[in-house]
Amino acid sequence: MSDKLSLQRRIKTLQVESVDHEAMGIARLDGKVVFIDGALPNERVKAIITKEKPAFDLAQIDSVLSPSPTRTKPRCPHFGVCGGCNMQHAHADAQVAFKQRILEDNLERIGKVKSDTILPAIYGPEWGYRYRARLSVRYVEKKGGVLVGFHEKSSSFVADMHECHILPKHIGFLIDPLRELIQQLSIRDRLPQVELAVGEQVSILVFRILETPSAHDEELIKAFADTHQMVIWFQTKGPDSATPFYPLEFPRLTYSLPDFAVTMPFAPTEFTQVNPQVNRSLVSRALSFLDPRAGERIVDLFCGLGNFTLPIARAGASVLGVEGNPALIERAYQNAEFNGLRDSVEFKAMNLFTVTEDSFSELGRMDKLLIDPPRDGAVEVVKSLGRSRPQRVVYVSCNPSTLARDAQIMVHHQGYKLRAAGVVNMFPHTAHVESVAIFELA
Picture 1 (cartoon, one colour):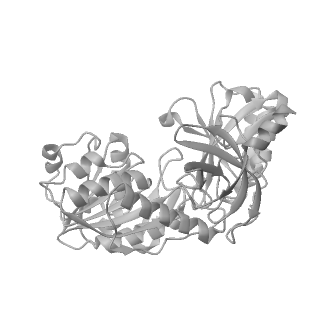
Picture 2: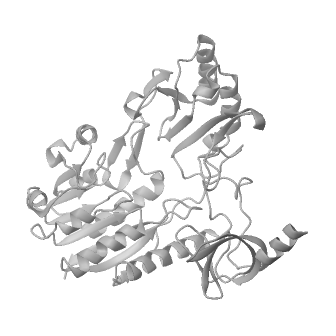
């Protein structure tokens, strides 16, 4: 009885005001913020307080008393358990509106800046969009054997999955056959991960193996590859150790940027954007604002394999791509050669997280600048713009809080104006906010 009374005391009726950057509903209880898993703005809910902290409480929905018109039935049967998605309960258009609000709120609250123009969101396919992913593998005897999938929400456990709708269909319905294959292997408890890379002509699965497969294992894997028309690679250590296993002859893994007549070869363990359709739109938008012209010198920071560098070169400008990983620099040169752009580009290895104004100025003249950093942002870069002072900066971000922090420096300390900003829905059904912002010298 005491447990029942305790539960009743923890159930609260709350009015949801908005959602945060992790898609948690935000409400207030006696002035204290409550984050409610699975709640949507403008809903009235009964929620169970699961954790109390000095500054806020955490809660889970017990029941929805007044549902939002944006609420919808999740397509995936694993939604709520699997951590791969956390916004399938909201209509796709509403998801993008939430992300746009998060971007604007971060810019205003953290950056103390406001964009002159809010750009229309970049959309792509709602389902089957994720061409890159890492699926975890665990042998769990209590759950009937091998599990293959994403982690459970807020957990290191692997979700008990049988399908995935954000992966391309031929991969999303391959989870059960993968489970059955790995269950039969002698190394089933020594295979912690399967990485997938889908290209325009081939799909590759990279098995992370901690022990050499037996001859029988190899025969089973080959039969699986033949049945499902997959190419299998083995990875024994770091990403550089990944090598083809079967078949040994297969098309090159590529994605293309048709607007710029660029085709990008890549290895299955190399970073590329997970959503190739949205990436095309993102590159086109970034270059429309960058507006590269013959005679200009443009610098592309965190250039990777050349996703933006090569389209800039195709437009006729001279371009320098800068990246911290020397191996990626070599691959970027190879991609330039592949696209007939070797004479139009230059690449340089530099640690962009430790640059100073002196070292940054050594990159030479830059009429315009494109920045595409990881989640940590590019704070040392924007602090170092003083001497270089490119007229225009296009900043592609995968983290609105670090974008806002860097925007604060650019606008309030470096003399730039935030001309435009908008979200890029690279990861539908997740709370991940990708965006693009355009700065010009005031």
